[in-house]
Length: 453
Image 1 (cartoon, rainbow, N blue to C red):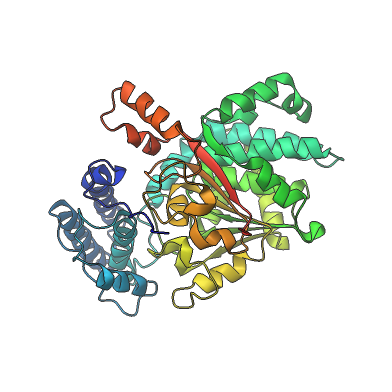
Image 2 (image 1 turned 135 degrees about the vertical axis):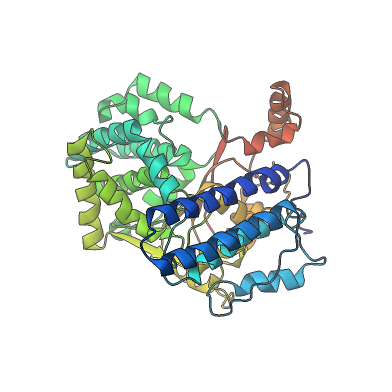
């Protein structure tokens, strides 16, 4: 089979076009402004100031490189881990890549690696997260949703201490998966439902139906069947979640984790994090402790103290027991698509990642970038089956469930004619390129592969 082309930054019909010309400069400008603020707040150390000014200069140069479409150059920092795959990719490209003409997935990953180099070479700044201020501000602004979800979780936790029917467990699995999918404080269908009885009610069914109307491919039943019925060791089921955003989305993922463990659907959940500040808001291991501290802080979240502290205690107990584990790996911050997750990929960590994920009864990939990497960020016709779009992963033995709100061009698994229908709807709403409905965040997919294709 001839593979479709990947998406390029100079394609005006792709979301890549506006991303590289508008979004990236804004992101780098925000980095520069964050450094400026950090220098004002921590001006007592001359070494800190000097190193910060070096970072400021390098990020300012990166901003110019993007705006003026300069060449994307190989890295010159051999001592920094995780860069070799980028240099190899640059060498293989037919034409020297520039910021506004390069493959989108490659150049977007390169951007965050290039920015990180500016920090890692300065000893007093090497662990600095240039996005942490924004992460914290965004999470704090979600206080109402954070508290509401904690209240509901505490109520359901009490009910889960008693015997619960399989039907109820599946309904709860659906609720928490939906919240994890949308990952924001305005899409909490669970908030309409205080108890298991409410969730099973007609009103609960209507709330689910409403929340799922924009899920274009919904393989939740297959994912549930894989986890509940087909797990090889039902007494020791394991779920892995390859995380996306920190803040409220990570919080929702943590509550999904608590449900899986409280209900004894699984005995272990492994959360996979990034090793470096990534894509502005992606989750690093250190963000877990920051989240726990936020939940325990009456200054950060003044309301809902009792349920928030209860939730934090539950997480810490599971973490202490080993039932909740956080891992990171350089592979997740490579420019490689996930077709490299295979036993034969020993150069950049794909084999190590495959070996770890193969231990899992269900691997949940969260978010848009993970979906782009699963599908190679290629121009698949949107009615291409998901198991075709993920290539050899479909026969890798990995049980993959992708929860993805559509915020980029690539999409698989739609019914025939659905892409054309949505493209027309998007044009009718005044948008020039109808196909860009797929980057609006208004629709989603929950696509599954059992790894046995």
